[in-house]
Length: 64
Image (cartoon, rainbow, N blue to C red; front, side):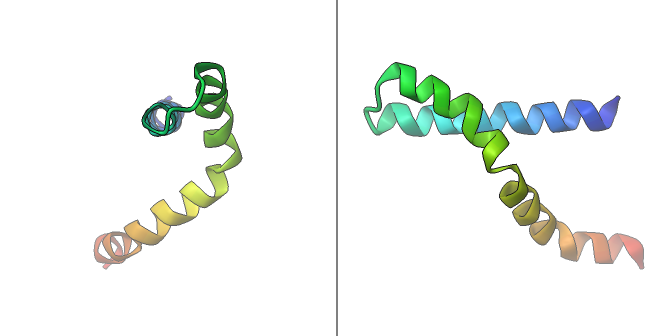
């Protein structure tokens, strides 16, 4: 349950950030809403890779 909650929270935050980015760039509302829902799913492998890369030193410290 907690893994699913964490995944959904990450998707939600990423979608909100994409939406805010599009609003500041004056993208039409329909396109901004679409980007907010589609891009996080499309970019998930990259987001996961970057997060794991940033957490690698922490994981090494925990593993020792």
